[in-house]
Image 1 (cartoon, rainbow, N blue to C red):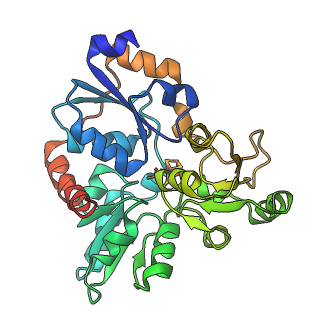
Image 2 (cartoon, rainbow, N blue to C red):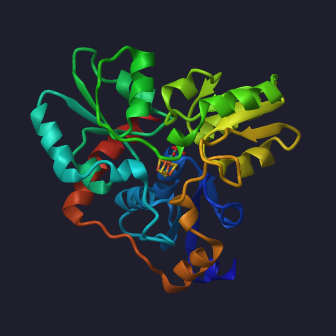
Length: 301
Ligand code: 13P
Ligand code: SF4
């Protein structure tokens, strides 16, 4: 892309982006990989093809770069479930608790947190906290419940969830599995407990792609946002990948993130051309939000 060179820009894209956007990106990854990549960017502009909290995280980590997002309305139901004023009140009511927040939240929420995590390191981060220390985990209650089931930690959970991962239908999933009885079910930990209980592997988007690549089976039912199938299929062209079905009777028979899909190739082009919309964060919030993200990155090495 000529314009990318002209602007000295780097395009970072999440696995849930439209295939044509992933194809022009310099790096495609999960939340953790994208944060680590954003930190290393040396170019003048980071075009973030993802959702708002991801672009904010890039700006927090690499503040001298211009970070642009094709559509400022590309939010996240998890981030929206956790308003800073209510969260602050919740924390104040439990002053002895360590605050661990899933990266899917606003910069203001990160600024109120002790440590951030993503779906690829959540278990490790929680396990790094001494057993006797009580924990608040926010905003995803499904990921929180999954961590509790794995670690036995009794965490206080914020009542947030991902609309995309809560849309999976267990009845339809069982039906699809009857059609492909040899298929292995894999799921993202934002999914509800009854979906996770059917899965042989639970992990982040990058973890799921890696599992499909390294597992000898040739058929997988994939319980996460359907955009992941693009890169996954490129990695395993000979394998059969079936998206887990949604409760909705939609055309794709899968679950798609309306926020992620707000970004289009045309909007990516216009965004780069106009160097707008830009992500800006008040410096006092950015500095506070950086601390728990850096703690996470340190523990993820
Ligand atoms: P990953 O960190 O696994 O890519 O997940 C991001 C996300 O938004 C899942 O819905
Ligand atoms: Fe947020 Fe869910 Fe979309 Fe991920 S898939 S960005 S958690 S709404």
